[in-house]
Length: 296
Image (tube, rainbow, N blue to C red):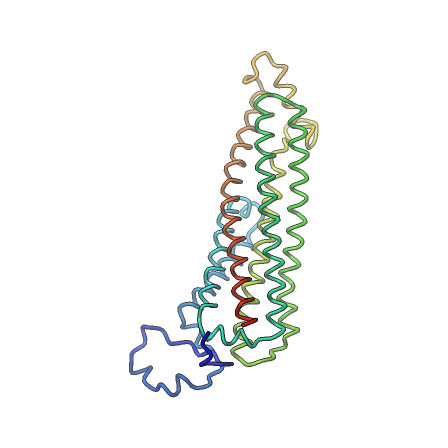
């Protein structure tokens, strides 16, 4: 790993600049401790993705529910941009000497990776629950439906717990910036600051994502009869089963509507399954990149 710019992070200027502007090589290799970062394409790219992730997570719950796949894509793109930053030798040199701040950042990213690993497992279980509920609705099997909805409700509680854990991760980088107090060179402070921003944005988006999927998991409980929660859905199915023509009548129409919502949810969960795997892998890669740079 290059050590030519130890404790210094002087990124090359944008390729659009003229050769004349880059002529004084001695000043370029000087011990500059500030980033000409706003003009550097990699850093501009990273800031764009941080803003996109934050903008997505700040939407209302209804908008989040309808765009969970987009939220996962934003987080994945943010960590791809973070990987590009960590590939720069100047950033590597700054990070390798950042000390305890990096240890605490690693802890935040590890917590997020763990949360997304648990999210993956919950999404797989939720997919099975929804498939079971859909089969029960189609067969007019009230007992199986009640069981599927109960397990789905437990998945919703697990997701709510993950959302709370992610919100705590969103606070940790802010505490880290206070604890760090601007110690170290300007290069180290700037690189760790970008990592803090990335961790905080990822945590906020993760909390919003988990809460949105928890809301989705509870959306299949019917509210169209006098019963509540699980009983409402079971009640609809039993009424429809007693009808001479299961597909006809108000009860049959209501059950068909529930089945349609379950089918839509099943499709959405399949998208979530693929997107959550990509985000989990990108988070693990970020942790490995930071850890490798920090210890070597």
